[in-house]
Image 1 (cartoon, rainbow over the protein chains, first blue to last red):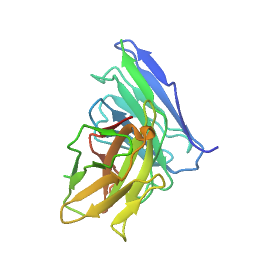
Image 2 (image 1 turned 30 degrees about the vertical axis):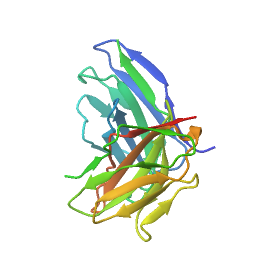
Image 3 (image 1 turned 90 degrees about the horizontal axis):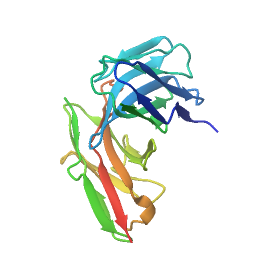
Length: 114
Length: 114
């Protein structure tokens, strides 16, 4: 089955620690995205990547970093500089990154800062 | 800048009743429009989208949405809801002028009661 996997499902972090969220897809999609979801709000774009070794900041990139070394993988690091990291994080991918392409979402990772 | 407004944060409805979830957008350029559904603790799934052509689009599970350009709306409707339709519904737009960014509304929680 093709799809997007995110791990872990739940993640707890102490203040001051960096954590990395995993996102893998086997859909052979070129484009990948990271969103943050907070209660009562829609999704906000953190970073996106249209091809390997290239990525762009979204609306709320501060305190986050990404890499795109492989087509299938787009990990997100939440750094200690992120002031309010507790949220639900969703990874998505689309075939070419074009504006008509459907974005497919993974199941999400819920990050809680203790 | 473009924005998406979902005025109703929660819509309670009895099973087999009709429902309408409202979505209005503002944009200086033409947009494509999407409805996504999110079941508890899961990622988002595409419900339907409007790219061009007929302004009425349908999903496989009985939902439909109509693009109204003059009113800048894309309301989602279903003539008879089921308990299983209980979920959060997000309206989203993407600009036609080469932006790859989905802009999401804040979501509407549909609560179907027996």
